[in-house]
Amino acid sequence: MTDHDHRRVIAIDGPAAAGKSTVARCLADQLGIMLFDTGALYRAVTLAALRGDTDLADDTALAQLAIDSHIDLRPASVEDDRLADVILDGEDVTWEIRSPAVDANVSRVAAYPAVRDALLPVQRNIADGSEVVMVGRDIGTIVTPKAGTKIYLDASVEERARRRYQDLRKQGVDTDVLSVMEDLRERDDKDSSRATAPLRAADDAVRIVTDGQSVDEIVLSIERLVRERWGEAA
Ligand code: DC
Figure (cartoon, rainbow, N blue to C red):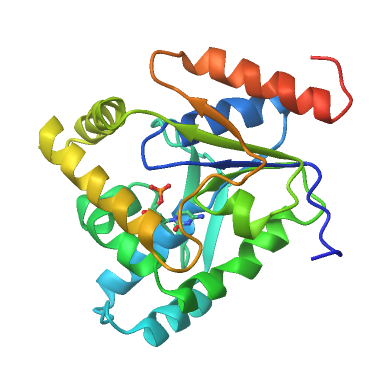
């Protein structure tokens, strides 16, 4: 790990719908740096598996799919609330990777060590020597344990369910808050209890609970912290 320079990596981890992506987007804009949402990688592999009828119990096949799939994250090219374009083998799948079918299966795919191993170099390549906001579950613990700034964003399950419900309604998905909350609980359980790279805060992460705080307030507090660490005035 000594050859990886991650001093200017900002790692943002936390459970689903804690506000990570929105905060990360604003933070990256404020700092004028890149955003990389690593969950999109796991989602894209899950989508590729569902489309190709890959057996979701076959970790070797899924890891091979992760290696063979060409996944690109690019700055948003369409103004439809997206944070970035997600391109899978040349096709824009930005919204498809957020579908209930992918939501329901992505934790299972992400739990396989072979899949995680396949996606690790992709993430480290982006991080090496870069100024980047990286969002995920294991960024501060596994992907970039030497990241210069680590944030763990959390919120109550009720608050997270409300946010996710609003997002889904915007996408035209017919659901209710209680089932969204159940799904979130289930996904968090799977993400936190898996043997490889479980969701947890790094020991040196700054923990922020976002209930009742505006996005602007959260972004400003992280921006101040980053600028301080980078030796810049806020
Ligand atoms: O952040 P998200 O909801 O888009 O992530 C989708 C899934 O991918 C989530 O259930 C956990 C998994 N994931 C992961 O295991 N490690 C990461 N660094 C990012 C996401």
